[in-house]
Amino acid sequence: VEDTVPGGLPPHLWEPLMESLRNKFRTVIIDLPSRNVDPVHQWLVEQADHVLTVSQIDVLSLFQTRQYLEMVRQHMPIEKFQLIINRY
Image 1 (cartoon, rainbow, N blue to C red):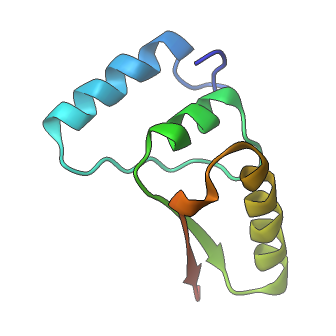
Image 2 (cartoon, one colour):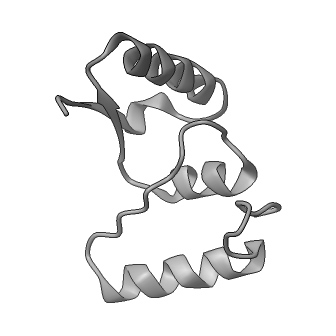
């Protein structure tokens, strides 16, 4: 991992943190922003078995979600992703 989320963990701490969480818990959930896909975001998605993308049902949210998924498709395996529509 080469970068960090602003105000987030330094890159060298992500791998041991994820290893520790996986050893301790069966399921690990990480809430990531969808506005940008930086190296940390990409690394976390690559480590994931499943990625749940949550969108609200309004037109703007669906448009932004589509843009995010199109961007993701260029860099990551889209098969991991599932879309969840939140009514509220």
